[in-house]
Image 1 (cartoon, rainbow, N blue to C red):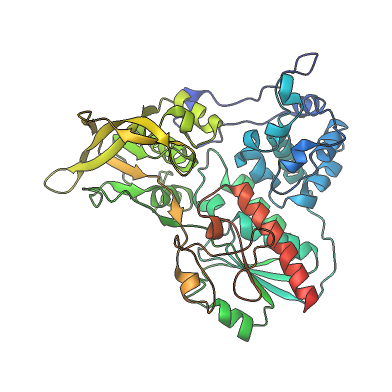
Image 2: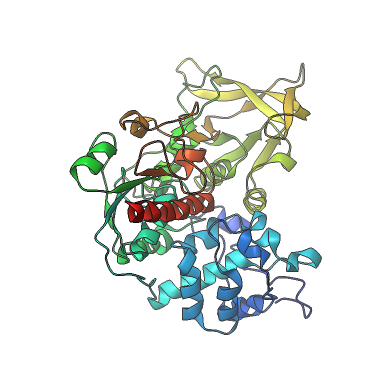
Length: 464
């Protein structure tokens, strides 16, 4: 429990590392009611809550936490879902430590209030008790299309539905959820327990979801607007095109993008013994990259029985992954080859991966990102034994939508150009946000973009 002065947060229960490293059950076990109420009582209910400004979707954090402290769980959920359509998701995968919790006054002289874990508790309890989000307005008769059912699309659709819009989401895959379904592992974000109910909550607001519809092939955005009566379109199609290093041997058997590897496991359930989806189960895996996706791929490979190393060209201080994910990976036994960069993937005569030639790095002057640029150390080459390599180097948007939509501007990275305030694009009536605009980023930033676009679409239609 928290200390008497409230400086230390209530610890949260987790599976033991050596146990969880062999299963796909959720690592974090969540707060009990007693623990959640005690942790909520640590909130100072500040007059000028900095935590709210630190949240990309501006949740009324003191409001939902105060209601939780008073054990008014229904009210707490109502306050929470005024701003967020995916609270059970955000409570698990949002980087609160760099956003709302980073602004918490409690964090100045002790631990910040555990806002994310409290959000998770309230959302989980609401799901278990069958509590639903409120529908705020009757139908206004206006139709809006949303491309993609990931966090940006679900948020935009949910907010518009609450305003009375008739919203249809078009999803390319056979299941809704976007990156929540195909990208984030079961042990961090359970699909049947968490993602599916969150999607159902959005549908309960009146949102329709059509799966297996590839915008740009099945139907174009121009056709949706010109032939099917949609007055506005929001593009939240994400960034699913993987990046590679373009080094020798990268086309070998046993080299995967993290996208393919995680999709096979998460969406296609390849981790289950009775799955119809085949997946390579090597004894040694090298994951190249240092972000959350790299941690997800590495921890998945570990659970599939491999000895795993993460290869990252900068130091631990520059790892972009959440500190919690890095710590969990270390606890589970994943090795970190830091200040190390691959230069070639080694293969046998049948083009199977046998290892990876790497070079040691040192940090030089800062680059455009503000991080110190890694520089190869001459004569430091070595071979890292491995029979599979997973590239987790980031993703970019698929150009299909932009190439089939008249007048839609993109930049040199193939991202759709949209203004930050409302997500307006160069094409009238078309809005965009999330990874399709920014490139690969976080779930909560995508949700923030979806929320902003919903406001922009509402203003656009009302002004017509």
